[in-house]
Length: 457
Image (cartoon, rainbow, N blue to C red; front, side, top):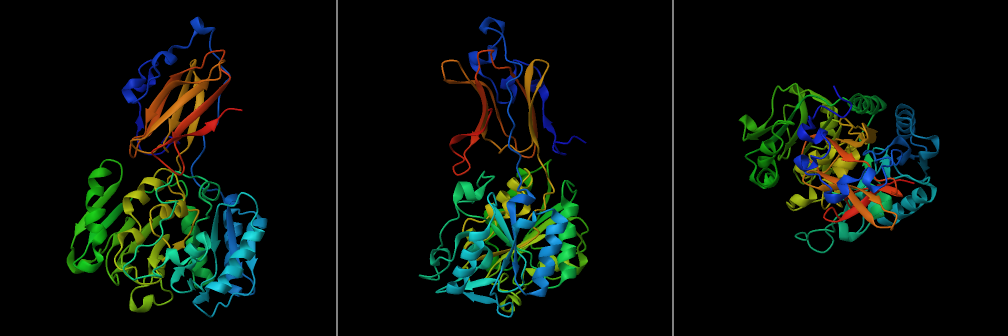
């Protein structure tokens, strides 16, 4: 199997020089650089960015003096190779309370931010409580850690109000702090060291495994909790056909998935989900249920808490900590999650990018799980550039350009991403007079605009 993943390469005529139009490429007259232009430059190359947060970009937050949090933090740092400097001990947390006041949390967050090493882009919370921040409304502690407590992110004005949007939603950002001024956060969600270790092990087993499995998208008979079925679920099996096994189940018996041994994704709409003990989840699996208080730990306010998904074998879940009033934007958009997860993002990145209004939400799980690594490489082979990538955004244009001796940028060729498929294309070499090379694609904060994603020294 190719190191670029199980999703087939887009090759065909693209492998031949001069036929880039067959895969959406082509550089016009700029594609004919050669001896007539003073020869080519066989040494001009650049390194393409690889998707997926690295251990050095994650800070592990520990409640100082809490035995469980201390043990979980130490286990995670060791298992994941997180630098010791990234383990941040937070004083003054009361692990017996599930709410922390907005004022106390502001002090906690300020202490964390002051001690984060340069380059940290995300955080992992290892304590089991507190899990929500209380002011005039409640925020999940993961969202509050990312944005700071702000009533604009929760239902402060009216229960029917929408909340502030996340700039990270469906973003192409690889460095959210640098691009958006926020660090996504996830709570490990374990209430014992054994649970934490099992979850960490699942995350590590997921890495690079490209797991075979099925995603189950369930429409239930619960009319109040089925909004995602009509706005998101029903269209996904056809969209990913041939690439990812997805099943849309329309009101199955008792509204439940039962007896499946290949669960890679499970998304549904119920207050409580039964028969989880009959399911087997693949490492890296994601599962959640659209309901009001799944993220209100430890008991879900009478509904099923999202920690049940982890106990059943999922690697991450999500739920809201206060009444979301049925806004689908406050829950993961599965199509967006799939798009980023299968293109090489870590679990924390893909999950966070799938929620448009995450302020009232709580993300739990193993943040660095990365089942679908998608490398990108630009090399010189047979006197041509060869681009191989499984990380390109679908239906989006990317271009390779060189800087001429006049200082202008000239396109060598371009290619468009294809959903679920890696690309393998060739471009002509830059002329000998070329001074630099750059790779252009969708901007981290605005995918409709083009930005420089990599440039040669």
